[in-house]
Length: 212
Ligand SMILES: Cc1cc2nc3c(=O)[nH]c(=O)nc-3n(C[C@H](O)[C@H](O)[C@H](O)COP(=O)(O)O)c2cc1C
Image (tube, rainbow, N blue to C red):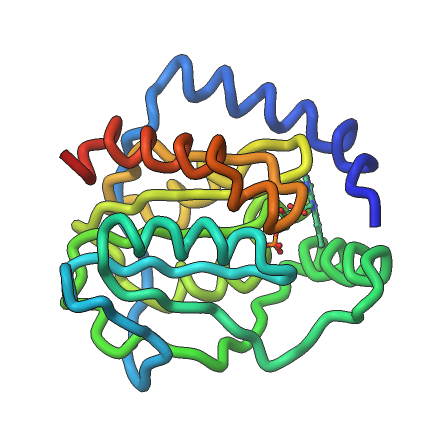
């Protein structure tokens, strides 16, 4: 289950991203295609209709971050799920994911956002997979029109930080405004539930002006 193999593989991408971030900041522009439909969104009611927290998580680590964000801000939690599945075994999953990335596969999503037009801010949360977003998020960002919305990325990883995901988001969503995100080293749900990790998430939300 070790994710250490990714440290080397993605170190370059992470470094490139750091340089890009330092040079250009994290602000960018828009999105692509559309849709809306049935929901798997839940709401606390505090900020219903304004903030969407969309996430993909295979083993629950990124879900934990999404939940913490919702606890702080309210908004609607939305989990991306796919029609196809991944093997239980870690290495088999990474192999499948690698093939999907090489083939630019777009998984079919089985959950849908009911009214994307109603959201001003869309958090997108994902584990770093082979240096970028899981392919399910490519499906998502190509499917919904996020033009004019704020996109706030959050990610968990095992050494690659955001990898090249931020530039991939900019490419997919050129008319959205990409705010500063957070990438936390995963290491399992327990680690993300620690007070240190919670404090990091809270400080980041404050820094980007989402909480007073
Ligand atoms: C298919 C796959 C590819 C991965 N690729 C990377 C990677 O390139 N870099 C990295 O740091 N971690 C990589 N990881 C580790 C995950 O990003 C990390 O374990 C994450 O916290 C898992 O989040 P989740 O529990 O929400 O699924 C990969 C994991 C999987 C399953």
